[in-house]
Image (tube, rainbow, N blue to C red; front, side):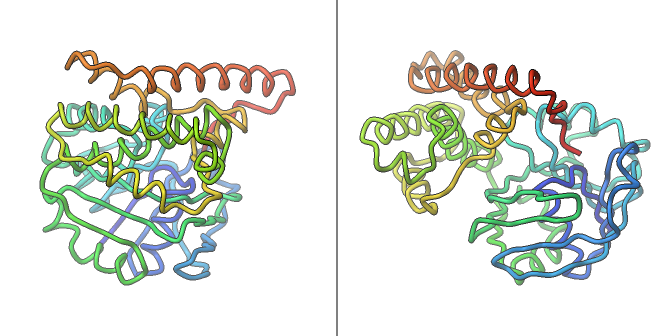
Length: 308
């Protein structure tokens, strides 16, 4: 199988390294102005193993069987400019946070070619070509529509250590990730604390629990099968030092994915006449912290924070 990875950050780099190590042909898509700075290999540090694998680089998406999209939601529109000929792509597998990107991609490239997927993992790009996979897990869920094309590839990722599932119900697939991610990201970022620190603070712990229940109520109204108890159990099982990617973005003076992560819950609450006061409060607190961090970053001349 031929794969292209659009977005060589923590998630995209992990996927690229894992696929290449498993024997798949991988091309990493990078910006034309930084292409010369990328090495011809990806070094991965992971609980799955430590290895260095060769990959190709390009500033445009070539003809491939699968295009994996792993950019930030706020970078999606710009990233899609690297696709000169979408007809040369057999299928598109987006791993973005949120939900709204699926409709956007299907409107542009056709419903049958876009295979929704989610990934739950803590993985960072330490530097160009150097990926550090910090969580002891990497959970990849994919729409069952992609099974005929992806079966062999997914089996290789399972052998490496990924937990992979094909899910029949797309609403459940997408919302199951969001009801886990949004409360976790908002709570850790608003408080600027790890999951372990939140668990030890009674008020913060209750706030996180209430936000999970609010998110699940919206998801259930959208037709997804989700359980607040199951989500909370998954959050409680995280390593106590876990920090969300949104939290890290705000700390580094980067624009967080607030609309992609909190937006679907807030808009869904309006559609279904539901009250989500805790989600709204956390969203406002994160927005405030983000403005302060962006102002501080700008005054120190730290750059635009754009991922490549």
